[in-house]
Image 1 (cartoon, one colour):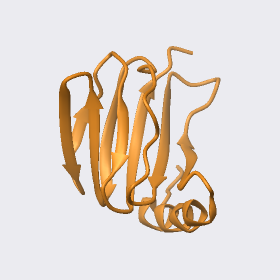
Image 2 (image 1 turned 45 degrees about the vertical axis):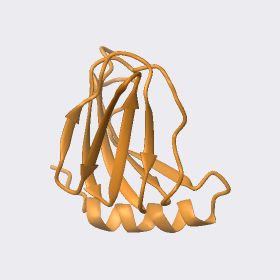
Image 3 (image 1 turned 90 degrees about the vertical axis):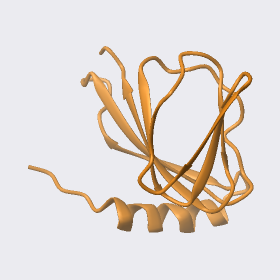
Length: 110
């Protein structure tokens, strides 16, 4: 059985994001090519975005820290620590209003 502190991992990734010109950092927590599910911890410095991108398939987002906005077309969702969202199946963008950490879960159908 594997155990990981998402809080500790988020703090490490936030330090990397602050040093990165993109203002973001990410690490796969679980999954890979041999799994049907991938979970990725994504950290964004406040004011930064991922940029609009296509949906990766069935996916959900759990906010671990900070405040984020997910925009998909005319729809917008604001989330804070503890909030959970099923990501729409079309183009969207994730923006951090404050330094934020989210857990992205994707069904990859390996």
